[in-house]
Image 1 (tube, rainbow, N blue to C red):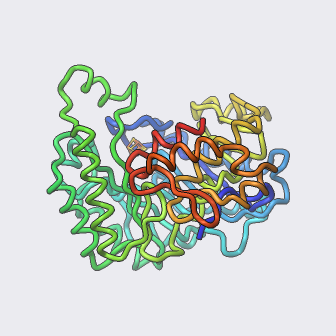
Image 2: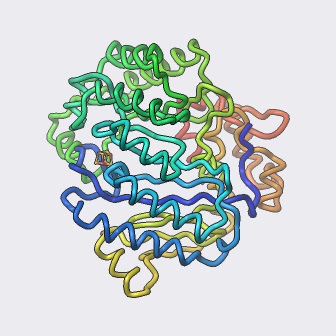
Length: 389
Ligand code: SF4
């Protein structure tokens, strides 16, 4: 059971952003750039230098997880990944059993490359499959085939990985419920079935090629009902297969197989954000680093703070964020005792009337330890959590 929120002095996570991709997918609004691969060597050294300067409140605190996200971290070779993980261990108190996750695109994940990542210290992979439907992969502008996903899983096992997550997207243009069901059935029937699945519904983000196409009326997005049906299908298929739906968009095969790094976010815990475009939060201090890798590298190399934005989170906002994040956890939701320990205020004194309103319309349920989403609340999770803001 993941109890949210975490205490103020809980172990940290380290998030390292790798803002490079071989090409930019038309739906993507992450901080990432294509055609800048020649910067990678310099960037890795700058990340190592940033890790050597822990911000106030982070020095000496135990680190439970490291997450290399992107972008496409698998554009880094094993020696570069090793350089980053070694710098984490050299400058921070990284636990011996820390979860160390790396996001990967399926193409190019040979057994040899994966063995190199394993050797570097990575012990969990998050592979961006997105769909196993060929038409879907082309629609999403992906440059891999479904066979690359199957091969990557197989190679991951050969390289010794026993903790692998696959990411899928549903609700892409022209996707049918039957196609989505095929994706789910296929993944559940794999010989190398993964330990974890993250299933996200496609959001058309402003400023992306998909948003332009939608504005011109040439993107046939499934409507909200069709997308909700796909989500229900995932819930039912994975439930029937014995999977554990522990967070709005995340499932694990075993009850304790959750993403420990992401659990730090959902528990509203502290984490370092390292690299260009990375967000970090230590106590009430929230930072965002320079977005452009060149600007980020120049700041690091000249000894300046790589953060372009620093904000102080007030206690009222922090309490609302605890609800927004913690309610995503489907077993326990927000724990009343943990809330009081973290915020020094009873959960009902902070949010009693809002909780009562949402419980009265069947969106939230009070339980012996706190409050969590109902199935109806889960289907409208974004609207429910917005009531706490
Ligand atoms: S590979 Fe991932 S991070 Fe890179 S552009 Fe595509 S969706 Fe964005």
